[in-house]
Amino acid sequence: MKVAMVEPSAVERLLAFQGAGVPAISLYAEVPADPRERQRVESRVNSLLSEARRLAKDGDRLSHEARMSLREDIERIEESVAHELPEPPAVAFFACSHAGLFERLRLPGRVRDRAVVDESLWLRPLLAQLDAFHRYCVVVLDRARAEIWELFGDQLVPSRKLTGDHLRKRDFAGWYGLEEHRVRNRAEVLAQRHFRALVDELEEVVRLRDIELLIVGGNEEAVPQFLRFLPRKLRERVAATFGADLDTLDARQLHEIATRAAREYEEREERGLVRRVLEEAAAGGQAVTGLDPCLWAGSIGAVGLLLIDDYATAPGVRCDGCGWLGRERRECPVCGSQVREVPDVIDDLAEAVVAQHGTVEHIEVETPLREHVVAAELRFPLPPQPDGAGPRGG
Image (cartoon, rainbow, N blue to C red; front, side, top):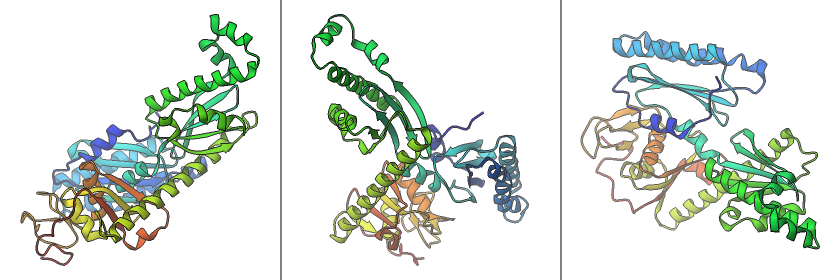
């Protein structure tokens, strides 16, 4: 059975996960495209589970219940990989037998191999993938034919193919057919009807498949003509165009062209977001840079947009009582509860922003954000932090 790409319902389940004091396993592994190299994924996953095995034997650190849960998690992950090798480009496992959790997800892009054992799931690599990849429609056309493909991450799959005969069956009948023959430039009429019918098909795909952006290619004459037929709501979604010949373009070439166009668009988008937020912060507007201000903003629901330099991590603490996030405390400065150490407080910050209906963007390209690690666009100005809430408070 093929493992599906990440579905929104799976992400919602993971974000809502509560481990009730028992550790869970979050494991990410890259999967090579070469089938011969893919055979090594099983041994790599087994190696990534070594820390979990050690903890499952440690009676001093974990209860019997927690150790039994970890052992079952390890067995389920190993059995899953042994039964069916993951598909490229990457796989993620989230497991906590005590809480009834086991998710195996095929990811749309590459990841770094890593396993984390903690009471909270380590979701930032997953959220980063979902933020990094838009869902595209790739349209390749000439004046009589068209192909519609869907691109998400590294996966390009065919959606619909339209031919002249198919389009003619839609509305070339009765008086319309008679009128067609009366028009002097019949080829132009056919092309216009082709473009209108293609727009109808495209609107349906965009609506049904939750498409965010379009990449349009074809011969140099047809592409600009077709773009004029797009309604404004679709024209605004065109991320790139390219020249191509339907007679000679194969799936491999299309994949290369489409993924390159998507990558270039997303890099421009990332640089634009960073520039906007950093300029707002420098002007003293409703934006902040740096880990401590962003943690405080995330603690009180003030973040509308969070930018994270990709792969940045930082240990910290979290208050499970009120949601306060910080770097070094024994007690929460807001409610006085004991705080819990977390392996990556940036991950907890990202989850908090998502839970508060904010947006998280992981920035892969090198930008000035790298020196700040994180930056945030705010919903409202930040109030002063509680006394002693800085990184060395308590």
